[in-house]
Length: 322
Image (cartoon, rainbow, N blue to C red; front, side):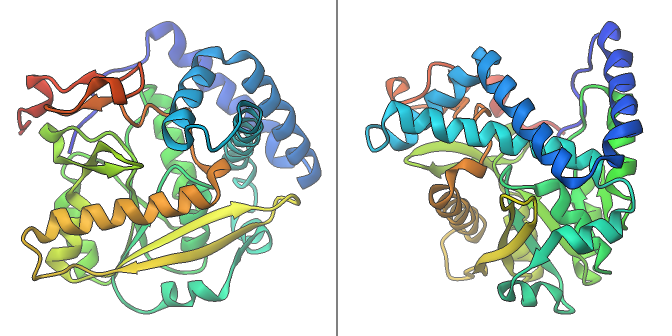
């Protein structure tokens, strides 16, 4: 797994850290209705002025939905998406005050999630969809042992603070470097492992190309390898809010490795990716369309089918990094 490869310029580190601390000083004290209003306001501002991100988002939407959605429908979908992600960011801060009590009130678990509370090792599969941050904390607040691997932020002081916030309810954050052994030990001891699958993991870092909405994307093979090695089931679960700001966690799939497959790890990685694709297609407004998911063009693929931000895989992306 990769380590921190770049950092914020020095002139951005402390302003960002001070802004986060400032937010921690007042956002947690807002009533829920004010948080929802602020999320709508910030989301609308972001949608209007973040031209670069909106361009990426529209390219992604055009790739997935083509002419099945009108330009007006795509803009409306993106507006809801921006509002949702503004709420996610605000809730990372808002839930820091009395987190266990607030999560018990504002995060609900439908009947499909009963299996998550079984006393067994599980890989909980999600993506940059819904509120992936809060669901891990809420699960830990229910007394469940859960491990997560967090990609380090470029701003180390902010990253260190975020890690402390994420662990307030008992969730354990594992650094990327040397994570595989710790995660394997955790699964063998019966812990749950939360996995974000929709990240551009280059082949040099253990990624393999699988189809995602009809185009190949690099996906980490590490979660599937852990599931194959331990026999733990992979459970697709997501957490989305309603108009009142109440989150509901639901389970969509239960996947198990197929020992008869030619390549069990690649087979399970593909099925995991298709599982999340189905969730995203069903309610696309909750996925992070601003992310350059189709960033790498594998050898032999037609560049014309990819977004303009994509680039061909280079030798440095393929070389395994020790």
